Amino acid sequence: MLKSIQPSDLPAPPEATARIVRACSVSDVGAHQLARVVARDPVLTAEILRTVNSAFFGLSRPVKSAAQAVTVLGNRALRNLALCLAVRDAVKPGAIHGFDIMDYWEDALRRAVAARCLSHNVGVDPDEAFTIGLLQDFGMLAILYAHPQKGFAWHELSSLLPNERLSRESEIFGVNHHEVGLMLAETWALPDALALPMAYHHTTDSEDIPTEHRLTCRLAACADEMASVFSAEDKEAALRECRIRIHVAFGLTADRVDQVLELIPQGVEEAAQSLGLRVQNQPALEDIMAEANRRLVKENLSYQELTWRLKKAVAENERLVEQLKEANRALEQIAYYDALTGLVNRRRFHEVFPAEIARHSRNSQPLSFVMLDLDHFKRINDSYGHPFGDTVLQSVASVLKEVLRATDIKVRVGGEELCIILPETDVKLAKQTTERVRAAIAGMKLQTSRSQVPVTASFGGCTWRGAVRSRDGIERVTKRLIDRADVALYEAKRSGRNRVVWYNF
Image (cartoon, rainbow, N blue to C red):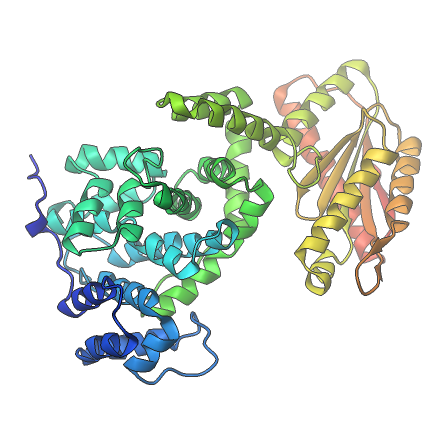
């Protein structure tokens, strides 16, 4: 049986860092006094100067002395930087058998960068948020430091979702990083602003959290969910839980959450370089989402199961009933509709399209399918900014709703890629309908403060009529329709864009 962890089992803060933390806790300590404290340790001074002069801080001119670092950063930011460097050096590579410490730091940096990126949306100081994110799982490192024979467990733990990981830690070690994090915070004499998010980011509803620290505890919890999108084995579940958690905590839409997630890979690489850590090339969110969508289609996870999981997760506390209702409404919107455009989303499309093929097979009716892609959309985003790009997508969605029938199914597949299912529509009518949509989009009057912006789209379509008698047959027809429409769309773009090309199925 594993021994219980005592303060003496934990890594101690370097004396220089401890002096800085103590000095910063004194309200009237001056910049000159603090600079003298820093300058007493030449190694720490050199590390602080190297880090603060890195691209991550983006300062306009180099910082050349401890006194100048104090002046530029301020007491709190200097304290946070010293803590980050101390935590980085708390456990040396190879000290724990079977434990990949660089993998741990990569995971910790994702939380730190996620907290920093999200902080701009919720009103928290970005540097404080980064430090909270980096420290919030320091308890896990301390557990492995105290039980080095269990270092191999990190590989399993790092692939789990946050709440699953917390439970598994208790099973393996008899303690979790929350509990040890609070012990560490006391040992290192950390201020409440850093200690409480370390101790309560899995229990953000605890009555022990003072009102002024609830926001940063919720921020740390959301940063944990965001980091798991990149590290968890179940990408689809991680992405879903991340969107729900941040929507409930801060009211951000799924699209806005995705925009923040997109910033994390580059941020991790920049932060690692500034702290002298080496991490692998980070996967892009686009690749993460592709993997999540593949898993979702394969498992055909139902909306009822999503609801059940959400209810199970929040039913532990009756005081979350109102939040549960709000989350359920958000979940229904996420499950079926794209948050930005109001069109059917990718997941719902993969449920509806095979069902429509089966229905048309029984009735021997023609079914037409169209894929469309906005022309030069990246150029629009780069020239006028993403908010204007969102306006373009919303305007195109409005055109689809106005021009098409209520029974036609309009889908946002992802980014600027859209598609349309035209039930009981033959080739002639489908081409006429698609041409009306093309002309309506080309006729939109979208204006920026500087000029009017032309928007066009390219279309590829095909029509199917036939009979299928098995699930495999439906899947084959579904794939063929998508493939044929994609080929036609490619030809529309290749031959000049802003046109309709039809593939003879």
